[in-house]
Length: 303
Image 1 (cartoon, rainbow, N blue to C red):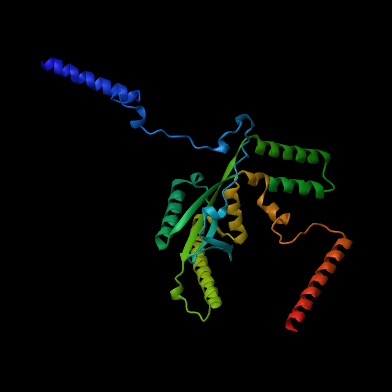
Image 2 (cartoon, rainbow, N blue to C red; image 1 turned 30 degrees about the vertical axis):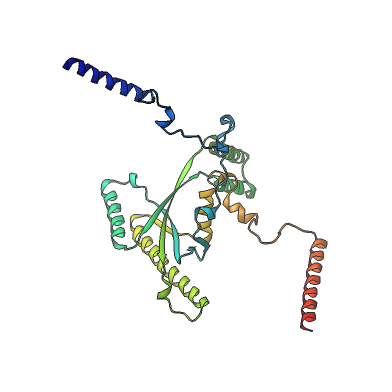
């Protein structure tokens, strides 16, 4: 009798395990839907792409910046301004080549870095950014030398052309990256600690206090890490914008470089294309007429 019970138990165990492996209901008269959830795939338009035509430089449109950071108001005075009176300052770090040093030199670098961390009593964030290698500046430098040097030998000119072609082909052959390292310092100010007569004075004192404190923190990092041959450079307003541009346009930044935005005046408030003298005169005339109409309307309202 005991042998029969044992065989029944073993048989039930094998049956349950087999049903679980096959993802079938243990009780055969029950519907499968009652035993597991049916997950439906998300309808993603960007997923239906032809892999043969995919380029490493193609990417989907980035989500608007405000949706990622709704609490950020603006980037000004070399700082990121948050809505809760928190300010962030960024600095780029040019690191030392740690693995080319011997053991004693590596220990010295570690000691300096640990000393800096022990000195600070505020949080410091580290941000690492991978960028596609951009050889536009070296190529432009070679082209500039070739154009300005009149006595350049033909062989040297041909060598320069070949070098430019090789650099362009090397960059386009496959994705290559470079690592950028940044330190982010955050500082929050309590309005109650600032005494001011009006709102304008309050804002001015808040900005001044935030900048002085954050700049002091960056200077502390710069002076301490310099001992380990690590260079720390404060990012200006334009530098912070460039980091964010590469963050949200990682692949497009190779084709549409950040410096071209300023060089081509894409941030200008007014149209700056070349215009003929007659067009400029016409525009000035229209501006004068509009100003006279405003002045006339103001006089009529006073009367």
